[in-house]
Image 1: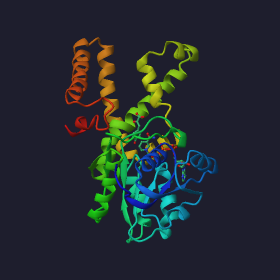
Image 2: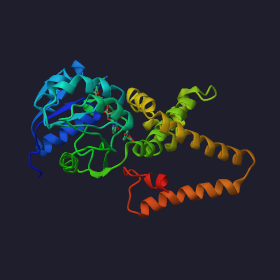
Image 3: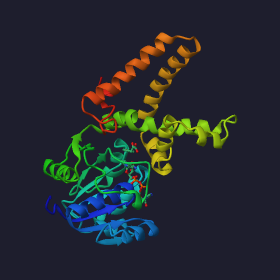
Image 4: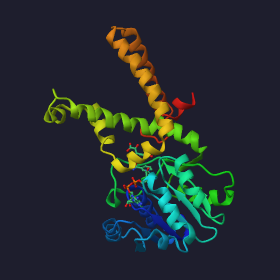
Length: 307
Ligand SMILES: NC(=O)C1=CN([C@@H]2O[C@H](COP(=O)(O)OP(=O)(O)OC[C@H]3O[C@@H](n4cnc5c(N)ncnc54)[C@H](O)[C@@H]3O)[C@@H](O)[C@H]2O)C=CC1
Ligand SMILES: O=C(O)C(=O)Cc1ccc(O)cc1
């Protein structure tokens, strides 16, 4: 079992991700003190009932006082407000990180507020579910999953190593990426699938000829898979869309072009084109499985983009 890695960890935001981190810190004994902060009194009370930390405060500014590691786990659109609130209360040498699904925007929001005596290292664990809130978290969520860091130019290597060691203690595989590249990769492997799911479930819900009960009664497993993604937290995904706008629009444009090709092949009965595409995509899945990668693996799709 890993030893204590930090004296005092502050968790800002205690939803699915924050509470999963808290559960692992506790189970692995990675910190002496874990201060939890949530602006919602109900969430904070629930975190205390679940005994996720050692103390509980509403103000993020109070939580970060004397902390050696600060992990911000809030919707990406709230990053600047949190950075502004905590900035002048951070102790010299503290590592400040986040878990946001987009990186360039989080850096733009937070970095300008970080004093130069603080190690700000943006991160993104590629692990999660469609659920949210402190009850949704669970220990071991990050096991075998990638955690990507997008360090700034002047990042202290020792601080980065320490943060990587923390995520490795949680069972993650760690990697580094340029933030803009991260946002492009995640746009195709994570953001687009969610947007497509929201769209297809919305379309089915709007269909006048298909009553709601028919959608529920006859939903095949393909549609049900989409409904899981489309049940993801609206605030979180609104923020992802607004804060990774360029990469998402670029990928959506390519997606729409490819969809138009498919539409045309169906209209004109071009079975060979359909067969060729469907065979190619089946090969993608086969090569993932052959490579020993579970389809759920966090780096699923990366090879598609790197081609
Ligand atoms: N849900 C997922 O599967 C994954 C989410 N992420 C990222 O992790 C972050 C947190 O997501 P979850 O834990 O899933 O969300 P969640 O909804 O379960 O928890 C969010 C937390 O942030 C707090 N919060 C909400 N708005 C706030 C604001 N304006 N100011 C301060 N605090 C605020 C909430 O009270 C709650 O404690 C997001 O940035 C998301 O993009 C990263 C990987 C996976
Ligand atoms: O629930 C799923 O399938 C996910 O894809 C979870 C997820 C959501 C957002 C992220 O930034 C990373 C992982």
